[in-house]
Image (cartoon, rainbow, N blue to C red; front, side, top):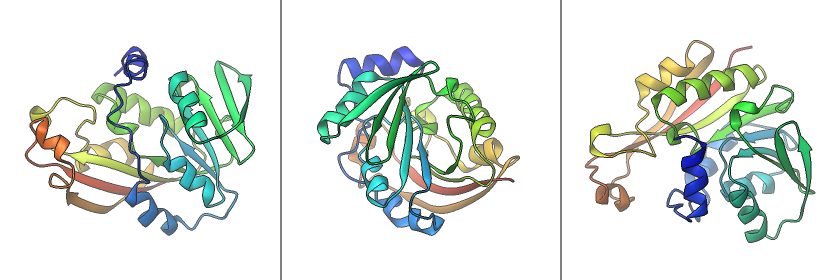
Length: 220
């Protein structure tokens, strides 16, 4: 799923991946990270996720990246946020007084300086949005730009890939381990079949889909 795909999805308002409610796994598992208020949290491929509002409400600073300017403006306007804009490298950055900065541009243009001081990553819809070859590049770039000892809360899905074309793509335990284990500690926190709760997947031809939650900590 390259840039043009996502830009077109936002242009045509084909955003079925957007959730109108705070993610329940974020609320359940994020407190286990024991982050201090004021800690910086990175949200990759953020869209207009209201999960960012939850993180802000807990006193964290949020640094996010999103390719679509439509998504960025929608998030700000729909939530009554006033932001100033600046140019940082290849990015247009929207900054709000509550500790929010959204980098509008290509994730792969982010540098370690852009994420300096980040303590944690919330990845609900980034890794699973990418096809296999891009997942490898995405994780390799994360490794390059994240500080040591960064904690990552990852939401992934395991289902028969032939039953449904992504996104979201199947990213099973074996793949998560192959992507992260050589540079981070990986712990699966939860694996549960959500097909009865998320009927849209059955409508797309899936008979079983496991939602899997991981806590990942980068090596120092």
